[in-house]
Length: 225
Ligand SMILES: NC(=O)c1ccc[n+]([C@@H]2O[C@H](COP(=O)([O-])OP(=O)(O)OC[C@H]3O[C@@H](n4cnc5c(N)ncnc54)[C@H](OP(=O)(O)O)[C@@H]3O)[C@@H](O)[C@H]2O)c1
Image (cartoon, rainbow, N blue to C red; front, side, top):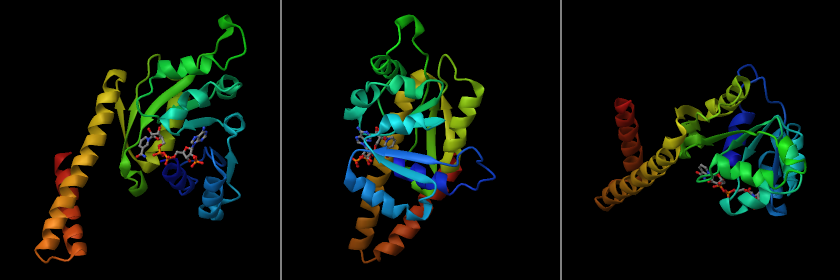
């Protein structure tokens, strides 16, 4: 998902998103660095890839996107220095099933100041959908409470607008809508596979079946909204 977002952001015309001119990506393995460096070689002057240097990546940024496997959540957020690295910055979490409170708690373990000085974090939860690669994501964005400063919310929107639609949601509807999004994709892919397989069994070439079925689904979805 991180790769799809980066890919899109690199291709946003400068005029519509003047905010971002450098990207730093921290991953966990050399193999991924090698693969991504090759894939993004055309953008090597704009993107830096780091291995396990999450703090350094965050320190250099105005906005930090949390996008890694859920089992890494406490490890990444509780790392010494993490709280300082995201202080006063926009933190966007696309981690499914992790509440804002859980993130604040994890960050507080990495905070070295006194409790009274504990920072408030500017965390917003956003859940892009599978359509990112086609710029057709429906990204759920939480109206966090307390709300983020206006300029931070606008910054978050400027990141996700180029990959599709943004659907603002109250905090209590975020998880159910995330499930709805995942289930919709799952049911659509099972049904479309079944339709196409049965067409192929009846002698219709797979590419014809796929083209017509996909177009019908797209048209029907447009009628719904
Ligand atoms: N896939 C989706 O459609 C989707 C949609 C919405 C939200 N999400 C959320 O996005 C997150 C990532 O999912 P994904 O499908 O993109 O997973 P993924 O393809 O497995 O990518 C995870 C990335 O995180 C890196 N990583 C692992 N441990 C790390 C650590 N300790 N520090 C820094 N980077 C680390 C991995 O690096 P290496 O490759 O080097 O291990 C990899 O590049 C999940 O929390 C998921 O809930 C996914």
